[in-house]
Structure formats: structure tokens, C-alpha cells
Length: 55
Image 1 (cartoon, helix red, strand yellow):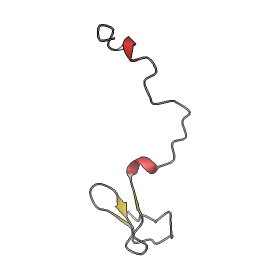
Image 2 (tube, helix red, strand yellow):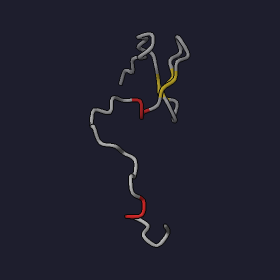
Image 3 (cartoon, helix red, strand yellow):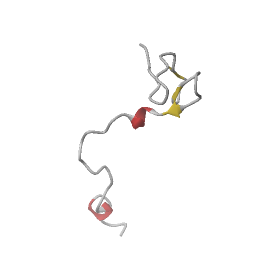
């Protein structure tokens, strides 16, 4: 699998086990930096729904 650096376009980027690295420009990015096209808010708006006795 070829990974292209989003910063400089180098096709020799690699995954180091934690994040992607570019050997050409030293740019690093994580798997989470992928485009998140959903409009869902991933945060919990009302934690008391999940922990009613805690609040």
C-alpha cells in the first residue's frame, strides 16, 4: 500500500505504528486525520444519560 504525504506529495510515506511519517518533509499525521465526512458530533452532550447517579 502506497501512502502519499498530504503535505509534499511524497509517495514514500509510511506508518510507524502510531502515525504516518514522511521521510521527505518530516510531516506526521494520524489515522484520525482522514476526512470525517459525517456531520455527527462525536462528543457526549448529556453525560447524565449514561451516568444518571453520578451527576
